[in-house]
Length: 346
Image (tube, rainbow, N blue to C red; front, side, top):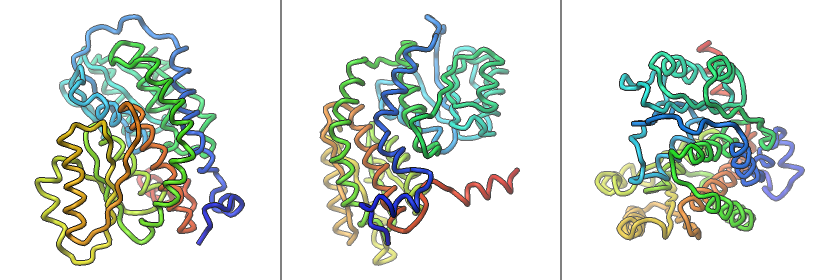
C-alpha cells in the first residue's frame, strides 16, 4: 500500500499527474472565469423559457451544479439530459447547453444536431473535436477552451472549464445573477483553505478503503454529491451511490437493517448554508445511520456562500478519491473498462 505523502511513489502510479490536476483546481476555475469574460458574446440572446443541459459523465457536471445552486431561485425550468435525444418541447425559446470535454461524445453530438433542427438557442462548451467543429460551422455561441491547467487530461478534473466556464457565460448573458466579487472572493478564500481540505481528505480516505461510500447531501450541494459519486467510481475505482435529504428520510432509513454488517460508509455533506430544517434533518439522519450500526462521516463546510460551499466540497472530494485510488495502488487517471466498453460499442 502506497504512502500518500510519498511524491516519488505517487508519480510511479500516477504518471498522468492526476495529483497535479487536483492541486490546480482553483487556479483552473479562476482561469476559466477570466477567459469567458474575454470572449465575444451577443448582448441579447432573445427570450428564454427553458434550459436543457446535455452531457455525459463529467461533462454534465456544469448542468448539475447549475441546477443545484439555483435551486428554487431558478429563473427557468432546467432539465438535465444524458442521452442521445433532447425533449420534444425544445424550440427557439429553449437554451440548449451542450458540454463535452473531449468534443467527441456521440450522445452530445447527437443532441447538438437535434437542437439545431429544433431551432433552439445553442451554447457549446468543449476543448475541440466534432462538437467544436459543429460550433464553428454553425456559428453558435461557444467556449472552446485550452485545458492547459489540467495536466492529467481527464474530463472529471477539468471542472473549472466545464462548470465555472458555464457559470461565467450565463452570468454575462444575464441568464443567472452571479456577482464578480462573489466569485473572486471564493477563489481567494479557497486558495487559502486548499491545504486544510487536502489534509482532511488525507485523514478521511482510510475510512473508505474497505467500505462502500454512500453520499448524502441536500439543496445546493446535491450536484456535488453526484460529482463525488462519479469520482469514487472513476478515480477511486470504488462502487458508490448518493441520496438526497429530505427524500431519503422517507424511505432509506428503513433499508439499513439488512443485510447485517453491510460494508457501508456514509459521507454526509453538511453546511450552515442549508435551511434550518435541512440542518436538523442531516443531524437526525446521521443518528439513524449510527443506530443501524453503520459508520458515518460528516463533512461540514465553513463557507459564507453557497458558491464557496460548492468549491470546498469539490476540492475535498477530488483529494479524497485520489488518495483512495493511490491507497489501492490504482492509477487514478485511467478508466480501462470505460475505454473497453466504448471500443466494443464502436
